[in-house]
Every structure is written in structure tokens, then in C-alpha cells.
Amino acid sequence: MIHSVRKFTPLALALLVSMAGMVSAGDNEGATFTITSATTISDVGANALIEITVTGDNWVNVKQVDAFIDVSAGADFPILAVLLGPEMPTSAAFPPGDWNVPAGGQLDGDQYRVGWALLQEGLDGALTGSASFTLRLLTSPTFTTETEGTITLSSVSLGPSSDDRDVVTVGATVTINPAAPPVIEPTLAAVGATDVSLDYGTDATFTVAFTDNAGAAAAGQEITWTVTNNGSESVVLDGSTEIAASSTATATGTTDA
Image (cartoon, rainbow, N blue to C red; front, top):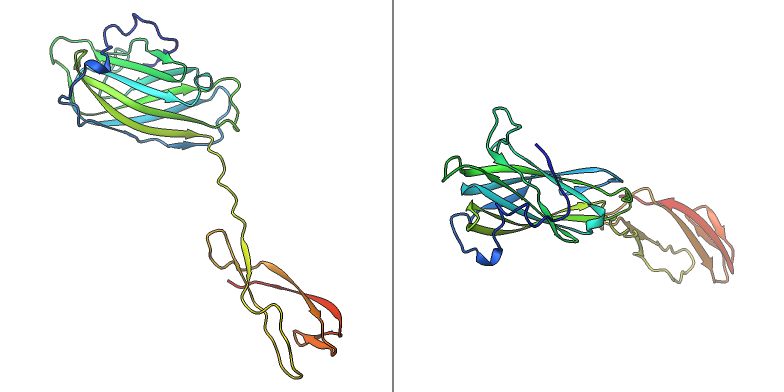
């Protein structure tokens, strides 16, 4: 069962809300939360649904949960809802359960709070162990595939009651439309001498090394050589091309790996 989260309504979470300043360490201080869906999502455009699945572990007698989600810009993600996993069945589940997702609220422009609770007396039905839930956000009509954004599960408050809570810092982020990594141009470096003197009958070898952006040798790159003969006698390039005195010639080749 999905319940949308919009502007904060002061009375909507009266059943669930416990201010963090009143919370001390308890049985759920060791609870953990892990994003098990993709943490990088690309090509997200306008009015797109983003689903973030979270798995919680080490829960002890949990009946109430509040999740706090920070977004890069509230205007980019105007709607947030939560879908509870099978460990926390709502009245819409089969068989139905007693977990309830009341309206949550946007505490400020860029932070959502969404909460849910088990409406039973005492510890009957309290959850111990693991549970999952899915955060569902909708992008705005002006969101484009070029818009970059982040969605961060900042913290979760959980426990058996509103006055018996632990607040767990999570800080797990999903990046939307991440920027392309910077282009690192390949490098070309001379290995041999670039200015040599030749006596009659002697040879000189010129060498370059071409590497890719990872620093590995790259094959197949075409190299153009420009050789200027500043001497008074002609020289032969590559055994076939004669370069007269005071003239220039070019030759091409390709790199090996």
C-alpha cells in the first residue's frame, strides 16, 4: 500500500513523532540500513518514478519507524511515498496486517520525513530481525536527463514506542543523472632523441609512447612524423624517403600496444 507524502501536517504524525533530543540509546542503537537497489541512476527525466529499496537489520521489538530523507532540491522531487516490505504487512496485504503508514511531512524545503507504525497494544507483533521498505519519489515536470540530483537516507528513528526510540545515522545516497567523468586526454611522449646529428653512414631511431587514460599502452593510434634535415647532405627516412638538405618530409605510422 502506497501513501504519498507532501507538505508537513502538524497533526498527521502525532502518533509517531518523538523528537530526537528526547531519545537515548536503547535496544535499536545497533540497527543498520542498507540501500540494496541501484545507488546511481541515469537518464531520469520529467515525472519519472524513482524507487529506492532499503533493507534494515538488527531491529529489536520495533513498532514505530520514522525515516528522514534529504534531497538535493525539494522542487525536483515533489512527491515521496513509502512501500513497506512483506515483513510489515498493511491492511492491503494478503493476508492483511496491522502496520499503518499515515501521512508524513516535509520538514523543510529539502528534507522529507515519512513514518509508519504497528497499531497494536504492548509488544504484540513487534518486529525483531530484518525488514525492508521502498522509498518512491516522483521527479518534477521540469526535471530533465541533464538535471543532477541526490537522494540521501540521512537517518532512521525506530523503537517500540514514541518515547522509546533510537536514532540511527545512515547517510546512504543515491545519485541521479551523475555528471560524466572528466575526459583525460591520452598522452604522447617522445622516448628517443628529437634532435640528432648524423655522420655519413649512421642511423638514428625516433620513438614515441602513446598511452590511454589509464596509463596503458594503446595500439592503433596514427602518428605523423615531420622530419627536417638541417644538414648539407641528404638523408633517407625509413629506408625509402630521401630528404634533401634544408628540406622537410613527413611519414605516418601506427602505434603498437
